[in-house]
Length: 175
Image (tube, rainbow, N blue to C red):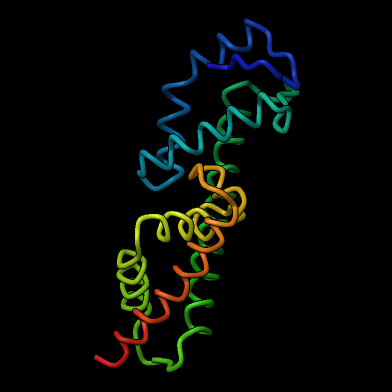
């Protein structure tokens, strides 16, 4: 679980064993901190473990290991939630700026549904690159790496995907 070739912080076997013993409780807490979202709880816990391995979260023995770990989990869940809200806001703001007509009387939920429908209308690659950039806070270059395509291809899918979403949203406004 904690074995990697390039550990920046040496992790003792005793520390690993203590973390392993707390894993089930830590996962339950991570799920709780993500409002019951198991998938997001897994992501949070993996981020926490990565922070520990990379030395961005260091146990200084000012409290119990469990207390410290649960605090790191809570803070990580909050960071991820803030980042997701920011990304949704930016995507929404972008779509509002790109649309030729605005619908200011639409409720927020309807706008999110329209954005979701517009995203689903895209080709798989366009949708993937936009999701990676807007929802997972990646650069186009990082998205290209994840998708195992060239950066140029990712940029093309990104640009065409945004254009297609704008067209889709404009057509929805006309209906």
